[in-house]
Image (cartoon, rainbow, N blue to C red; front, side, top):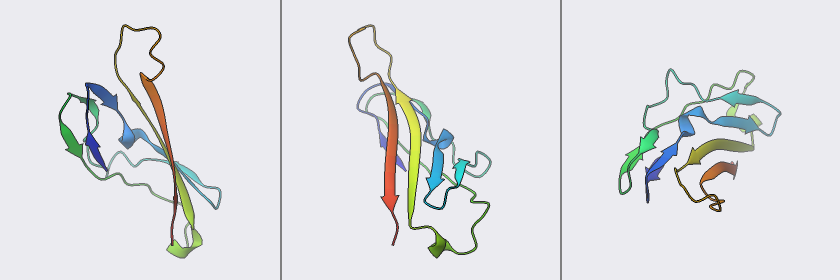
Length: 95
């Protein structure tokens, strides 16, 4: 994953949750995943790999789609700023 911070942010994709279309839900493997998230300054770039261990997987072709969710936010004093907290929620169809 790549993160290009357009402002000072806090992003936590290595704490993501992955759901599979066969009904499994797992947390990111913090032991094997890269440490590249957290507090990022405006104008910086960060990237790394996130790993998920799927406990009940006989064959990769058994999964045709995944859903990935993680949190990011930025600090603001504007109480009307509804964009300061974001739950990213991405579905990916595999072929």
